[in-house]
Amino acid sequence: MKLSKPMHVISVIVGLVGIGTLIAATVAGQSNLVFGFTREHLLFCSIIVFLVAIWLQIATIHHMMLEKRGEVV
Image (tube, rainbow, N blue to C red; front, side, top):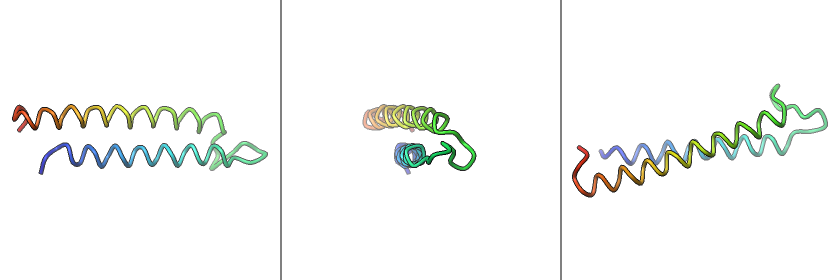
């Protein structure tokens, strides 16, 4: 199996985790706490997780281009 396929799946999962943390941050009630984390903490975490997902997608696209050329085994 090509390595780009699991990389793509992992990046999609990381993106969904980012969506989950963003939803948790927006649902934070009056106390601004969700599972013991503050709203700001969850917003910062969701931003970082989205950046990781974007980075993984770019790496996946690069890896797929290398696979087309036959440079990656």
